[in-house]
Amino acid sequence: MQDGNATDTVVADEAAPQAVDLQQEYETSGVKEVLEDLDATLIGLAPVKQRIRETAALLLVERARKRLGLAHETPTLHMSFTGNPGTGKTTVALRMANLLHRLGYIRKGHLVSVTRDDLVGQYIGHTAPKTKEILKKAMGGVLFIDEAYYLYRPENERDYGQEAIEILLQVMENNRDDLVVILAGYGDRMEKFFESNPGFRSRIAHHIDFPDYTDDELFHIAELMLREQNYTLTPEAAKALHEYVGLRRKQPHFANARSIRNALDRARLRQANRLFQTATGPLDAAALSAIDAPDIRASRVFRGGLDSDTDATASQGPVTP
Amino acid sequence: MRLTQGTFSFLPDLTDEQISKQVQYCIDNGWAVSLEFTDDPHPRNTYWEMWGHPMFDNPDAAALMYELAECRKVYGDRYIRVVAFDATHGWESLRLSFIVNRPKEEPGFRLARQEMAGRNTRYSTLSYATDKPAGARYA
Image (cartoon, rainbow over the protein chains, first blue to last red):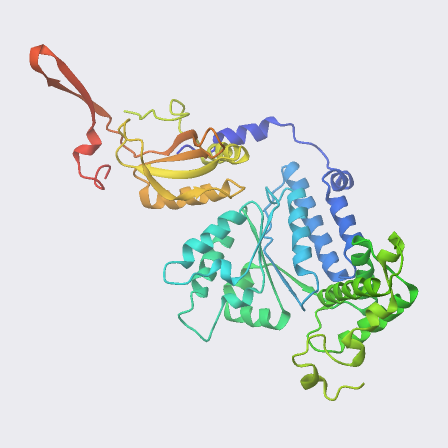
């Protein structure tokens, strides 16, 4: 094969600019839009947004340095997202892919979301091709490994997960320019995972922790979800939802925004049911989209129980009527 | 003797960056790229051995470049080519194919003449490389 002389001359031919306007760069690259969109549509998550903004700043500066011919080293951007269920890890990963694409860090900007099943094979010799296939699919974009700690199963030393981890580490190191790997999972279990796989910890520069939402934030998220689906809350329903958020948090299997989405789905179900049973004449759009207090108050959460019947009494003690 | 089969074969060898750009062009056109290798470069030997499967759903050329690096590790002393397959109705065949790896020495071909009845002659092309058994041809 020949050496890369051709490309060197091309770069030298371009007149190197004397100065770079970061602000203008920020606006024209589309990064501004992504960050503003992030602010508008993602509620709360202040530390996460801060980290994303820092990453964007770093990449913009790197790009500017490159343009001025200064020494630059492409930063490693493999990340780990930790946080409780429903704190928006997947959503942010999707935005991250878009952002990195706008900044020119990755070429395509698609997100390949996988779990253990997609990487680890069933029998000897099955894992490597499977993992490589996924890695190839993710090249030019972002590979999002949800619940990454399942890859490592210490209780079974013949588990094929280790093989997948080795290939992952190798590609993360050698093909840094080709893909960004984001590992996601619950905080404590990810911590254990990193402890038993030190190679991962050293290759991942950015650890972003997703905090739980406050009650107010969850309420805003609920409002946003409803607005997207063209539903509205009556004032009483809004009050009921506020109470619901507070109560639901204290009950087991609370999954932040995901619990809220499920609650809203059930509220829509009850609303539809209510409309069917009570409506006597034609309904207008406002009636079809209004969620009222009874739709929310009918939830089991208000009676101290869990939404699922399974361990409602076991974990809650006596159910107050 | 330099083997001239496929696109770009009269140009100097493509650099990896140039290969990557050509491959990206193929992918952007919706063609599935794949790698094939052989140690028998006879022009009539159309079916080279496949290296992995055709990549139908990889949006980026880096995937093929990764496999190319793997393939060179194993078969760096053979011919390797990139093949772009167009699956759209009415085409369903190759759109582009070019050599991305050659052995250091390319022995070329000899012309064999067979004399027939009535001073007729039959000609055929033989690759010097195939004088040696498969696997030991470019050592």
